Length: 317
Image 1 (cartoon, rainbow, N blue to C red):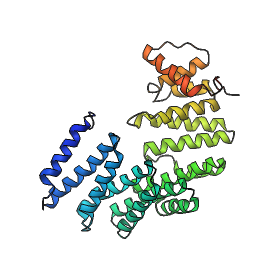
Image 2: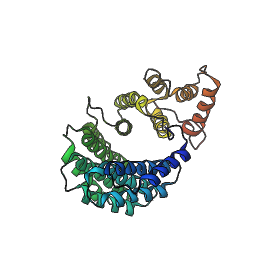
Image 3: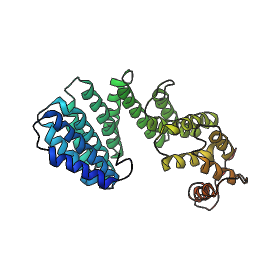
Image 4: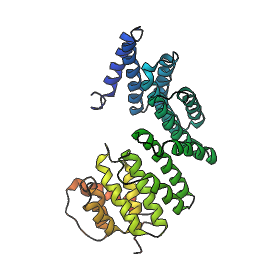
């Protein structure tokens, strides 16, 4: 509750109090609550821009609760390890992140329990991304390929989600290398109709496929992926700036008028009213909106729609 209310200092005090009072308990169930509190403490520290401290806390969780091999703490240990990999990557410490990945694969790779398999799948996805970012492309592909080989046909949602993430990562790389057709092929496998998936991952997948379709010259298919991406937006807890950037870039391809219509009739219409307003003004229209929306729309026009030459980029269609 305190974290949700952005009262992070108070939340930290609660986690610290749990550790102070119960950190030396010999009761397994109480120790499990301590481990969970420490994992949450690390997440709170990240929210406070104290990522280094968070990694230290999560390392402590693994050290204190992972040595005896008890299954009681598997969820807390797996979360601490996976969080550490992501944060170390964001801190530009890929070598350390890869080391944690390898330790995680060794720790969880020998078990056939569901939590072990899920941890392996997620670790391989992260390891692949780290290796590709380091230009160790073939090694990264090998990690992703293993995830896809093992879990693409799985009926277990987290495992299937991991396979989708691996396919999306591969597609992103193919598109960055100018191989739009290959990118589309990977995404056609990842974004199967009727599957729920992780909203953030599927959203990114649709944006990548939209750009790939645009690179192929297929604006109609591009617009279809934009439409699907817009349908996912209300499922997110927040509207990342990257979404506005992606939509603004794609508007230049499908055309500002088409993008306005897609936004207007989508479930995310209210969320994206400032972007729609900015696009309408690029078309010479004067939509009537609240002053707050006008101000945000003007910021969007200035930051996202106006290119370095000082002119708004228009579609050639």
